[in-house]
Image (tube, rainbow, N blue to C red; front, top):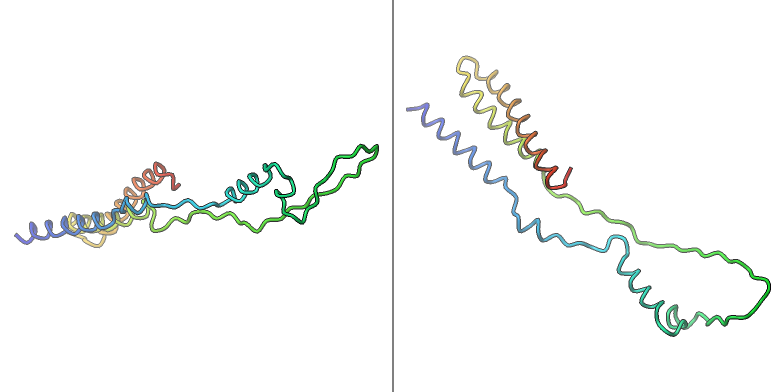
Amino acid sequence: MKKVLSIIAIIAAVAVVMTACKGNPAETKAISYEDTVGFAQFQAWKAMSERADPAMAYGAAVPVAVAKKKTSTKSGSMNSTTTNTAQTAKKKGWSKAAKYAAIGGGGGAILGAVINKKNRVAGGIIGGILGGGLGFGIGRSQDKKDGRY
């Protein structure tokens, strides 16, 4: 009776851990994409430069250039600076590989200790290593599918 009760308790604990580690899909869909490369500023500048009046495109302080026929031309240089920095979206939380490795390692340690009755410590260590490795492999494949890797 004690063995059956302990096995049921272990299965219940593993089930609670596995359901608690699931991510909320509503949170992952609510990602806001910010303007990371200044595309909105570029579009505003482009709209200003496409106006019919060239003086309005660059502000009133810039004089309007009148085309004149000259035999010699001078070449100038144009410098441009920006204060925009590219920002990458930060990944929050554990990767699936880490979650699955932790769950697999814990579950494998418990099952290894229960199965190996003669030496529970060795069974727990071996089960934890095998379970963690298997969990990591499964989680890594899930990360590749999601594009996190």
